[in-house]
Image (cartoon, rainbow over all chains, first blue to last red; front, side):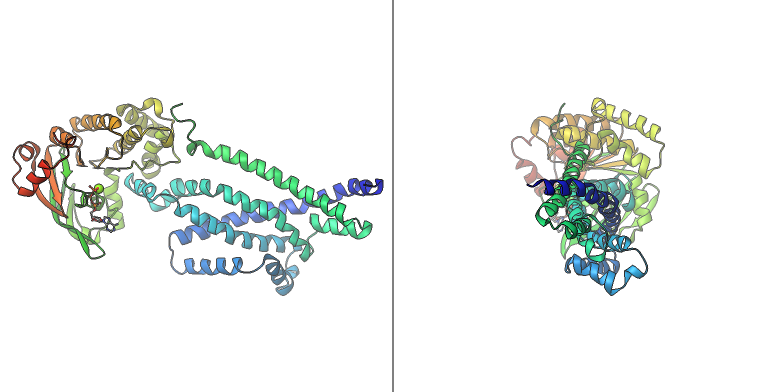
Length: 226
Length: 248
Ligand SMILES: Nc1ncnc2c1ncn2[C@@H]1O[C@H](COP(=O)(O)OP(=O)(O)OP(=O)(O)O)[C@@H](O)[C@H]1O
Ligand SMILES: [Mg+2]
């Protein structure tokens, strides 16, 4: 590689990383947190077969999972003129939360249903109420089961945030496009941003391992008769 | 202290329990025996409302309930006064042994944590598992898990404990330790209703026996008389046909 390309790469690195830290990361963290809240509520309502609300949530999941994320971003930002009420960043948070919430809700529902019914019956037999059983027994077990697939969703989301550049959020990918417009080194620059995404995702994978280790106390067998 | 009359239950039109009536006095150990599919588990589950009976009446302590329309509130109140031990233990897998025991005290009965821990330690000590207090269920053997489950039932000071074949999911060498705990409970005056295939246990420990087949109580009575001289032909056949190791 020529000296010029190296210089561009080095100079652009902070200019790409900074929007990553200021936009991509907060967008991911905030939207995913909201998505988790949505997911738990939607999954619990369906798990408990709450009438009407269950059907409403099924429709929500059906629509969100059946349409492209990019189209959803456009509908909200350009169609509904979300930019008129909020910054592009918050419009993106809105769309990503709703979108991710639908997927995570399905993950959570599956995990809730995987909790053996005997756990619930045992809860009733020691005098606990449905709510107490959900909060203390079923939900913790379901979250443990759902942890790997949810981590997977989170990692996906980091990369999907690049789509937010389409609604003028100045995140990493948009920063890269801008720099490329000036220097025209697409291969080097897009590989550079790819590497930064890779670093983010690697860190998350590492965090996932750590989390799984912490959560594994009651699922691992090695400690048996220790 | 527990009296059930004319309890009936069907699943999808198929009658599983027909006109069951039974009576358990304080301190009784009642063994429920009978062939597979006879409705023993279903009966126990109906008594704790894990299954809802279609018909029948229950006197529990000082109260009378119509099983057809017991309120949620009544069900909760009855469960607070009973214990249940499952065939496959059903320990909370995300809780340690001691947490399994304290859960019903701290969460359901709002007992202060320290007091609950004291009670739980004593309950675990009673089943010989004090040193395993901080183990998770999957770190315990089947026999140990079932003993924790007994401690969990015991800790809430129930007026009666229901056991559904507490040893039949266990390897033969682990059965003894669970039966020993149950013997100890029986000696201490605990009221117990035990579905079991352990005939020796039924004969030696129980005060009365209920023989069930095809959803009906065929014969019931004091254990000594029941085993020495069963009246009904079907009971006689059942006892005669027990496999060698089940025989007494
Ligand atoms: N949830 C259910 N739905 C439909 N049928 C059921 C259900 N639970 C039990 N039954 C049926 O009710 C009958 C009695 O079952 P139950 O489990 O009470 O018998 P059991 O005496 O406990 O047998 P075992 O000694 O094998 O445990 C069986 O024919 C069974 O198939
Ligand atoms: Mg049974």
